Image (cartoon, rainbow, N blue to C red; front, side, top):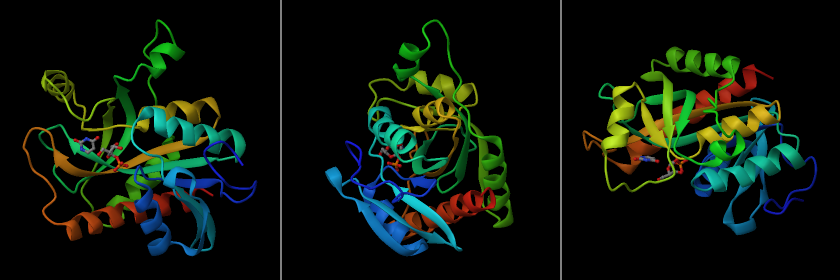
Length: 237
Ligand SMILES: O=P(O)(O)O[C@H]1O[C@H](CO)[C@@H](O)[C@H]1O
Ligand SMILES: O=c1cc[nH]c(=O)[nH]1
């Protein structure tokens, strides 16, 4: 049992999917896992363990932003022996060629979070995905004919902005999309020699104003991304 996760040693699988929204954790467990059992309800940040194609998988909500995901990922790595962590989340498109419902695989995560500046004074650490996981997730997207892009994303500390200039500039430098957790996930996984990847679905676009049209469409696209994450995870075990 850790401070924010009320599970016993062994309750959590070595491979864990990490959506920001705890209700999406419940949706994933109910839709994709067999014999899923809830191991955490502390702060409503639900966590479940079950099996997918016979392999043990957990799914844990992380909340929004670097401080929140850092709490859960630290505890999963330090107290529960997590080996493979895959974030499954939403993001806002930034580059012009990124469209709503595309899947984005984050090769690296640029960030305005101060966490890594405090950790590596004088350096600009480049948080990076684990290559084999990334390669398998990309192949799983191609196999399903999904529209996928791989590259640099932005992990931002703010959702609402006074000025769009800084994000516009990052888009000019090729940054695909913005979300709020991946740089912390990649940095913590590196520290603990674990594998990490973020697979994201574009839910809106910062500059075109495009958004998901219906809740049903959002769910379908989200489900496609979950299958990609699960397939990438089990092929690596
Ligand atoms: O859909 P999730 O995983 O929560 O991810 C994105 O959505 C939240 C903002 O609405 C942030 O957590 C961002 O990273
Ligand atoms: O962090 C996020 C997630 C989705 N859309 C955004 O604009 N930002």
